[in-house]
Amino acid sequence: MPDHSSFSKNRHGRFRESDLLRQIFEAVVRACMAAGLVKGEGFAVDASIIGADASRHHRITPEEADRSRPERQTRAVREYLSALEATAPDPARKTPEVLSPSDPAAAWTAKAHLQVQFAYGLNYLIDTDNAIIRRCRGDTRPGL
Image 1 (cartoon, rainbow, N blue to C red):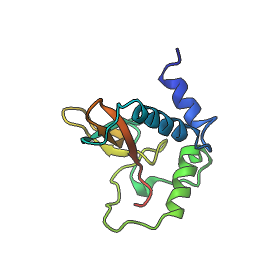
Image 2 (image 1 turned 90 degrees about the vertical axis):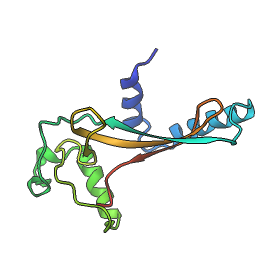
Image 3 (image 1 turned 135 degrees about the vertical axis):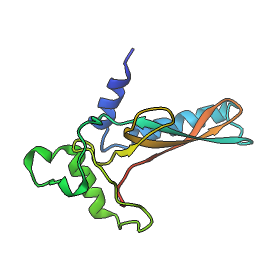
């Protein structure tokens, strides 16, 4: 039985440029609908904080983020910078106070009663009859 890291490695590696995992998710939702598990009569939204694989002890200010140095040119940094260049800045969004050098897209945040850490926000739309997830949206940071 594969563990969570197998799914993560495949999602970020082998299937990175593919829409395959979304197609599988949508096929599973369609199968649930066909089986009568999703009726579309009641929905709930769940917001979750998912910790990033980034040390809370290695944080820098945006001014310290010299991304031209070769050791900072990780895939995460390249993708983050590419997304920033492709997206118009959102004037309603504040500039972050700190960044993770290894995962600049992660937000510096805290969940109730937990220590501050780098994390991502996830929102799920759930059909309440059988707790089937219908939609999932992750909040990454491009557009700052």
